[in-house]
Structures are given as C-alpha cells and as structure tokens.
Image (cartoon, rainbow, N blue to C red; front, side, top):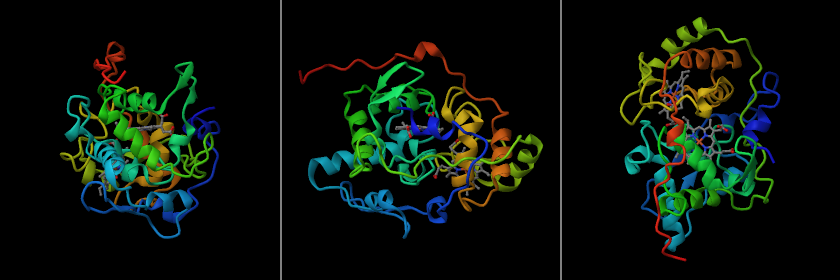
Length: 284
Ligand code: HEC
Ligand code: HEC
C-alpha cells in the first residue's frame, strides 16, 4: 500500500479544491478540561471521522495514556526538549492535533499501518512513521519505540481511528490537489508580507512557541515533507493564514510556499539517522 500523501500526489498538478468548507476552515477547538477527560469538539456537519474525534477520551489509565499522547503532540518541543530541536509541536503541521481533514489529518490513520514504505523498502509501523517526523520535521531524535511517549502518541492516533476499517482508514483525509503553476516567487514574497508576516515574522522565524518558524535554524530540516512544494502548498491552501484559512487561491498558496522554500533551513545529517536512545527491555 502507498501512503495517502503519496497517493494524493500521484497526480499533482490537476485536481479539485477542498470541497467541504467546514473541514477546510480548521475551525476545531480543544476543550481544556483535566487530563483524561478532554472533550474535543468539531465543526457541525463534519463527516464520520470528525464525529469520532469529538468524543471524550475514555476513563481510566487508557484515557490518561491517550491524553498524554495528545499533550505530547500539541506541546512537543516543551515536553520533549531532548528529542526536538525545531521550535514547534507536531500540531504545527498536523492542524488541531491531527483532527482537520486535508491538513495533516490523523483521523483513521492507525488503520493504515503497517504500511509498505517505498523509500525504506520495507513495511513500517506507525511508530516508524512518527520517528520520521521526529528526524525531519522536528529536526530531532525519536524517543525509543517502547517508551511511554511513543506509545502514548500512537495511542492517541489509534483513538482518532476508532471505527476506521483496517487497511482503509477514513475517506476524505488526504491533502487537497492544487490546480496551479508554475509558482511565482515574486508574487509569493508580496503575499507573504501581506498575509503571513504578521504571525511568522518578516524574518520567517515566528514568535516564541505561539508562531512556529517557517525557515531558519529553528525550523524543520531540508528532508522534511513540508520542505517540498508539493506538501507545503496544499497545507497552506487549507490551513493558512490561520486567521482566514481557505482564503488563498491555489496559485497564491503555491506562490507563497515557493517563496518560503527559497530560504535556508537546517540540513539533515544522516549520521543522526539511527540514534534511537537505548531502552531496557524489562518487560520481556
Ligand atoms: C513541519 C511540519 C511537520 C511537523 C512539525 C510534523 N509533521 Fe508529521 N508530517 C508532515 C507532513 C508534510 C507529512 C506527510 C508528508 C510526508 O509523507 O512526508 C507528515 C506525515 C506524518 C505521518 C503520516 C501521515 C500519513 O497520512 O501517512 C505521521 C504519523 C506523522 N506525520 C506524525 C507526526 C508526529 C507525531 C509529529 C511530532 C513528533 C509530526 N508528525 C510533526 C509534517 C510535519
Ligand atoms: C494569525 C497568525 C498566522 C498567520 C497570519 C499565518 N500563520 Fe502559519 N501558522 C500559524 C500558527 C499558530 C501555526 C501553527 C499551527 C496551528 O497552531 O494551527 C502555523 C503553521 C504554519 C506552517 C506549518 C508549521 C511551520 O512552522 O512550518 C506553515 C508552513 C505556515 N503556517 C505557513 C503560513 C503561510 C504561508 C502564511 C501566509 C499565507 C501563514 N502561515 C499565515 C499562524 C499563522
């Protein structure tokens, strides 16, 4: 099986826009009730996957584990400083902690693993895929596969996949296709000043933990999915600008992403690739 990102990009240039305005608006909110009882609400009219995402975490230790995974995904650089050098959380790109269709959705994802990975030339588990985002998107080092942290993040994604048929997942989660091109960097630069700089800064470095950097030493590295125009443009089309998501045209999303990607970012060093921290196998 191929990942849904790769499938969606098989026919890159021509396509359709985000159909469900509700899903594109990124209008999900997170309740702030105590750990284990978080209520995750979604916009009305959303599909089955989104309805599932609204449910309250189950009580007891399993709910606590899922809530921990949710916190790790939304406060990654704060909670896992040794595993992350990018100044951002997973949720910077997996909008609302993976609960927005077409914007890094985790809905139904657990059902799509183990999955054939063309690059690695082997079947990978969800933990392998999470590890990739630690290496590239977070420019860091993944926690051990059997660590509480890795299992908590996996549990959270599994929880967002309740009811998804194994091998199928939920429909309508893949990135949108962009009908535009070729990108115009000069137009993108102008658009950046008008629509992005207020949050991400004229220097692209964002502001503290509130606004993540789009380029520079604290951003994702050059091997990350987001470092590719084919990944960033559809994300921006659906999720940005955060104060008016869905308001850019395909061409504008492509232009501004092309401009962002003209800047420098950390270079991935392959010698970090297998640096998983050792883990005592005490439970065998
Ligand atoms: C800078 C943006 C960015 C950040 C930060 C990020 N990711 Fe990702 N992630 C992506 C993109 C883009 C893809 C899909 C493209 C690809 O295949 O590389 C992806 C794919 C994934 C997938 C597979 C999704 C699928 O549909 O197959 C998982 C799981 C995942 N990320 C988990 C995480 C976790 C957990 C973190 C935090 C530790 C994280 N990501 C941080 C951008 C990011
Ligand atoms: C109102 C503030 C705001 C504006 C305006 C805005 N963003 Fe964002 N952006 C954010 C926040 C906050 C995040 C983190 C994700 C979240 O909280 O949903 C983010 C995340 C991102 C990410 C993924 C994370 C990263 O650091 O790479 C990209 C790419 C991005 N924005 C691009 C843009 C582009 C391009 C524009 C202009 C078209 C834009 N943003 C406008 C606030 C904003």
